[in-house]
Image (cartoon, rainbow, N blue to C red; front, top):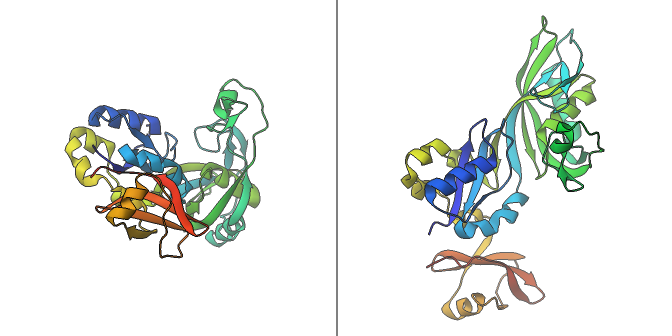
Length: 297
């Protein structure tokens, strides 16, 4: 039985659910799920939890995400990217400098309230926003609180005088639930120029990055590479204090019992036979189970 996280470098044009479907089919595994949906037009890191690792999906969502992408100044759309219906245009007559972009980007650092794009999977009254959009129904989109840790301009912007448009590259680190398309749109509003997102690539998610990723096509062509590509569950808990259990402690832990530990850490990864079996959390003078993994062996 395979247990672990498979980091996929998702290609453009495929949904996250498509990736899970193909992996389930080629690996003949039912217990599989993804952590963090990527839009079809977005490429990059898509962590796939397999076997016992599916219990980690909620924890995986909590970790920050990193992206690199490109934005375009000069027009805005209803979807906040280049695939949407154009709502506003404005010809640029002079270049907006990298320093100006960087300064305005810094105004988004920290906790902000964000309005998701109308073409998004956010639910309102039991329906996705994109369903309302496709039916032409106007709704008030719910604001959501997210946190931006980094938002930076990369390289010199490219100004096209003939088109009256400018493209710029950026890098972002953000919390779960952040819509980068909205950040690009909001940056344009901040500057006073309509803006859309051109491209987006996720470079890190759930503690994993592109250096650990493999292409779906590689796995479909040779499923055996999963054994080398899969990240062990233990890797996800590399930032936790790890405690090796003796046999008496293990007998208690596998039954979900509270145990006393000589540590001041709030959360610990409990390991037996070199495998993380549970995450325990300090409650009073004892440690009690937060997540039971109980991997084989």
